[in-house]
Length: 304
Image (cartoon, rainbow, N blue to C red):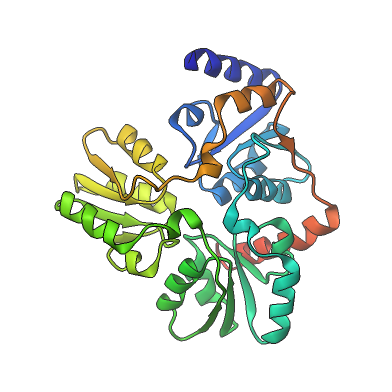
């Protein structure tokens, strides 16, 4: 049945001029029908250069918004309209605008995991892999980092010469993992290297052998001469890495390391979208898009 669905999807996407983008947290069966798999920003950049006029994002809403921001001439669909991101949606532009008034000498750095509207009040955007580099390159000494307090804490420790203000926000999936689970996993797999995403709590990150983005974690594991790894990010990555490196062993840090918003997208959703009976087209007001894309352009200027 899965193979049948995949074959129908492959046929329809060619007939209807669609490029399918899948975030790395998607299931293996979805990644197999995607044209490109990766982190949200990498996918949005890739969308700009593909010849297809229609983009189908298998991820969450802010990712589809970012694709539309960078490729306004293309038709962008989100495979499942219910796929949101709690972190991206937990702060709004009005609140951050008020916070900016309280700290007028602070530059606002927004994680890419934010809505298009929130990006309109940011000075620069960052990804988990570029955050340290960009914050260090910025001329401003004072930085208001939103929305992820854990990523912000990690970045601030790498750049002690700058002043960071952090708000209480973040990824509930990464933040729910506790130090005790790391110690339990390390005890169960004493030979394994611990790789972690900086959206995790500081006490979890401190125990890591490597800290990096999803793509960074995967790249490290693939290139490493080590044979066992504990993966401190969404459990889909455990499966992808096991598929890529059958001679190595990968262990999930926690059975609860699951993003339900990512997992809501199915092959059926993709098939329905391509059939014209599902998903949601992403439409952005042009003035909002122009204001929001400025922080991404600034990120590119700083080498992000």
